[in-house]
Image (cartoon, rainbow, N blue to C red; front, side, top):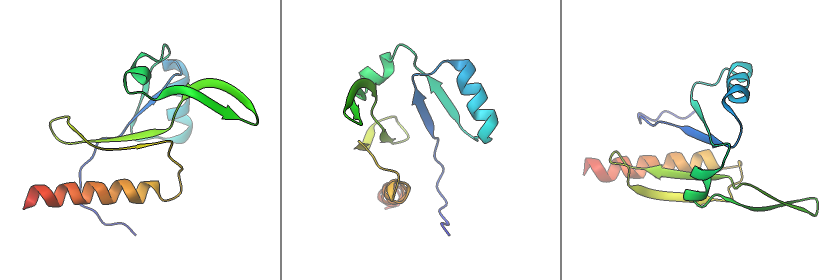
Length: 104
């Protein structure tokens, strides 16, 4: 069991509209915000809107990515084209390392 004493804000960016986000949050009792980006302007700004392939079909979509920012909003680390397995552990390790760098 993880026992970290870190405080992080999680935000998830999706191209869906606010109504669908509200339904999804309610269905899954999510404790965090989903950011709506139907015109994918923010996704393009972060470089996470791009060509994807699934079963030989190509389409434009959101590329799963994680960005770790410090308290002042500076990029500390980024992960792109992520896979779920092991990803949470990698992010928590990076947060812990960042916290250790701040505490001296």
